Image (tube, rainbow, N blue to C red):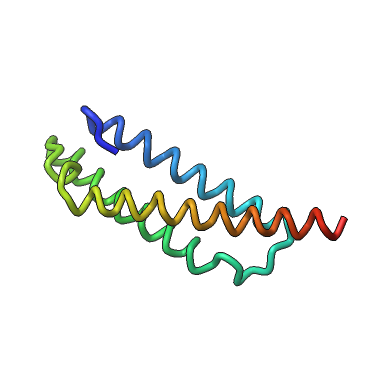
Amino acid sequence: MKHDSVERYREELNLASRRLYGLKEEFGELGVPPDTGKQILDRLESEINVLDARISKAEREGSMASLTSIDYGRACNQLIMDFELLELQLSDARARKKEKA
């Protein structure tokens, strides 16, 4: 995730937040036990909060330095991997629900 403005980073993070909310909703709609995916959901929330703090810092300072660091890139990569893990768990839950129907 590399952009040319702080605003684009904020937009991307807002998309990630909405995606996380949607996944949480889907877990609930599928009747998935609350502990399923909880660790990943919690980690995603934490990662989004960390990225949000970095973007806020960049907005305050008027500099993108904190958004172009290797650490920021790692945090973004971890976020992507955790979303993929969560999607796999949801896919399994959908398949189980379909089998029961």
